[in-house]
Length: 439
Image (cartoon, helix red, strand yellow):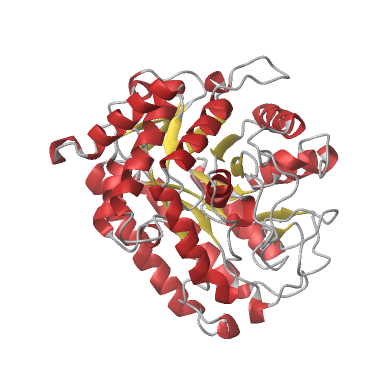
C-alpha cells in the first residue's frame, strides 16, 4: 500500500507541473470507454448513454445514515424522501460517504463511519450500500464526498488527531480563525494525508453487500469527490494543497477508472481567492469537472439582519461568481457544477413557517442559469441546492442525537438553509427547472 501511494504521489506531482499545453486535456480511460448508465465527460459537457446530461440536484449529506439499520437509521423516511425528490425531478444527490470522529469542541455528526482508531462502522457502510440500491431503483445519481475540510463531520481534524495534533478548536463564531490555523496543518502533514488515502482506498474499492457489485462498477455513482470544500487554509500551503488534490485524484482513477472525480471545491473562495490555483486544481487530468459553491450570507454578500433587502445585491454577486467560473471552465474545456448554494428564509428566521420569497429569488436565478446553459449546450451542467430537509422537522436550534436529520449540519442552526416538503413556492421553482433540463 505504501509503495502504491508513493507512486501515486509522484504521478500527482508530475501532473501538477504539466506544461500548459496539457491543461484541460482529458486523458482518462473513462473518457474513452463509456459504460452503460455511467456519467462521462466530453469537453465541456456531461454525457449519459451518449446524450447530454444536465440536472437540478440536491444536497442530502445524511442519506447514508437514514439508510442504515443502526443509530439514526430510518429507511421508511429515506424511501419517502427519495420518492418526493423524484417527483420533483431531482435525481442527482450529493452525499457524505460517512462522518469521521470529530473534535469534542464542536457539535459534530453522529454516528460516525470512521472511529478514532480508523476502524469503520460496518452498519453505516451497509447503509451506504442500501442507499445506492434505493437510488439505483429510481435512476438517481450520487456524488459522494470522502472527507471534509470542516470539523462538523471530522474531516481534516480527524486525521490530525490521529497523527498527534490537538483536537480542532470550534470553528464557530470567534473561534473561526483558530480553526483555520489548526486545519492548515493538514496540508503539511504527510502522515495525516496517508491515513486519508488509505480511507479513500477502502471506500472506493468496496463491494456492495446487498448486490455484490463493486462500487467501481455501479452506475448509480456519478462522481467520487475528494473533499467537501477543501482549502489550503493558508497562502503558504497552496502548492502542497494542489499536490494533494492531484495525488488523491490520480489514486482514485487508478482504483476506479470508470467514475468521474471532482474536487468538491467552492471555487475561487476555496482557493485563497487565487484564480490561478483554482484553474490549476480543476485542470488536472484526473479531475473531470469544476465545482462551485455559493453562500451569499456566509460570504458577506448579504447581511444576516437584512437578507430581504440585500437579496438583489446577493443575486448580482452570485451571477458575477457564476460567470467567472464559467469562463474558467471554458478555458480548461471541462463542465462545471454549482454543487452547493443556499439562502436563509425571510428575516433570517429558522422557523419552518417563515416565508421564502428571498430564497426563491436566488434559487430561481441560479436554476435559470442552468436552464439557459442546457438550452445552448453550455458548460454549466447542473446545480445541487443546499439542502434537502424534506419531511424532517427542526425541534431546536442545536441538533442532538434523536432529532431529525436536516441538511443543516449539527453545528449550524436547524432550519437555517434546509428546504422542506411544505415549501411550496421553492418546490415549484425546483420542479419547473428540473423539467426543463430533462428535455
